[in-house]
Length: 257
Image 1 (cartoon, rainbow, N blue to C red):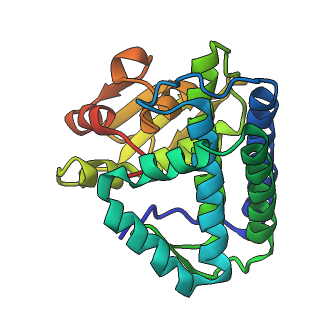
Image 2 (image 1 turned 180 degrees about the vertical axis):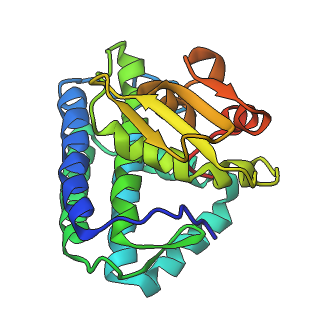
């Protein structure tokens, strides 16, 4: 069972939703201007079409989980049957569709997801992969995935992905997902508190944890987000760590299983 331990109020969710929409719109503007979606991205075997197909499929599954949670069992069984190949097979099926059809599917699904996450009660739980989520957590999770897969597309096209304040949602998930990182690496979760200080795109500092914590991580918010979404190796970032557990965290950091 995944537990990010992230609490968001209704106000925070309402503030995050426009950021989710904006993240999708930014990626939409990029890919809709590209006629060739067969270009490979950094994800092995995945083209631009695979990336968009994956996002569209995930959005469709979010709608199933919210609207007909009992039917989500079928989604889980399909994923279990495919094992580690589920994401690849699912993306390949979507990527086989005509570009125009896939683009319209993704546009429609992300619009519906934003509306569904806005309207569902904040404390209403629904199933997800290995977890029970609420709209409060799904909003930043969808933003994180849109940003991360969007980064793959930006990289594939050689276009600079300008960081924005929306990264704070991704960084927050990365911070609270520290235990998930150690769990995925089959390591015991550290008991000590951590201090994380990141420099946002506007130069301001984003901070989590007690100021006197021995375990410390610092660097740019962009590099931290690239690291926890596994888009960059630790060596490719400016991140620094003080403390043995903080060092280990940067080595295994992730925000999803």
